[in-house]
Length: 255
Image (cartoon, rainbow, N blue to C red; front, side, top):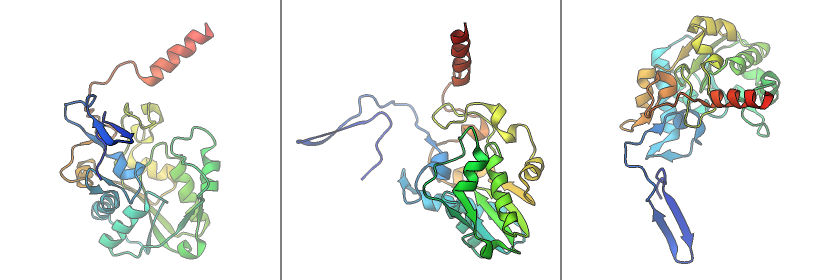
């Protein structure tokens, strides 16, 4: 029917549904753009904007910003598929299903240990689709780079002739203090390496990110938070971060 507002309480009882907005803040609200890029289901509509259409637009922007000669476009399931379709339509390169996801394995982008083993279990390449082909690979983001490197290797092992990676988000450059589990710049590959260096590290023939200035295209007319990409936080950021508190608490325990 509609989105629940931040701070709103919905009360369901025998008398029906009542809305309590006493705790809703009055200042300008900004929606996390990563909802459109990754978190939300593609059949969702957030603030009246279709997530599927937002990801399609991201793929089309990528095709314009980072064109490449290739035989097929494939996406990393699940959040890379819609962007891959948009890239395919804009670039007029055939869209194919080149990666199959194991539905019984959880997400890996925030998993701290054994990430390579998890990726190997989570995804498999379709050899008949990618063998001998120049492949455009679309994914939603690169955080540490370990997952991306493993996926590129899966495609090369399946016989891909070239792998050109395109990312439907800009490079992660800043920590998020609002819920996304990215709390330290030391773990962000884009903070320490150039785009050509990242391409070499993950084994891709080329690499292109969504330009940060095009994030507004994902949800036209909406006020979004993109602080993890541009460092412009919508609220004041406490100096006492989660990592600071953890390290201080660990020190107290050791004492």
